Image (cartoon, rainbow, N blue to C red; front, side, top):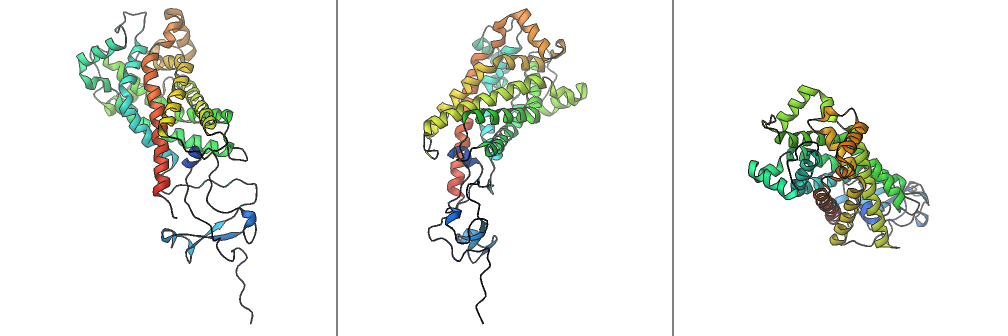
Length: 375
């Protein structure tokens, strides 16, 4: 009786040189190319494209859908892009969330000063003569912790904001890479635009509205918000949920342009630095410098939108009929220069912000690549 034939879907033996590696979506950002495993080309495999073949694993893979230490891996037809693998421990969203939370704790005082200067209308008697005077008055009246007023709203929002940003960018970029897996600058801009709009609608608008109201409330003779949850409760009680979505149009425009500019610049600089080698490693210092440049570009590109957004979310937002009316009133009463109020503190915060987020994100991805592997 002839020996039973092996199933058609299995290769006769695992490739001798095959090494298994678990990858995750964040690796695509670092590599500048598609998600790849260490498998040989499908054309060279027994059974041809479209079949299942075993891949050798270490003991970590045994018992997880494996047979005799080999995991069944579907092969791909030549010329097709590999599907995105999901890291079992952390996604790009989780990695971005961690980076965002650390960054905001470091840079919040500059955000506080920027917001106070943007709320300080020239049509009234100005409260502050500049950045240093704003810091001095705040510390004198409320202590050093006064510079962290509104941090809770931004901290609660920064983690999901960064998660949505990097998760959406990764999702879009995986669908827009070319046949070689590269993401050019124009597509990077479009992916960044999509990421910015998503984070604006889902997280940033309510988070920024609450933050601005908290900071603005501190300048009142009798502040009425005793803390984050009390403040949110009061805002919703007085204005409904709509009160947490003031300035949505300006926020979408600001965040969309923010991330479009940042990811465009970052993608351009990375592609330039790596040249013909998409896997060329990047030193954290280089990543930080590129991130700071991307952040500076976004500050000079859309600070007018940031000023309009801040005014639309303040306690005196009722003075403006809409985003367009707010911009016209600022121009008529305060002039063009008013659209760049708070540029210096924002520049310092954003450059540090973007540099830190990209460094932490990249380093978390590298760490996971070292820790989570099966070879």
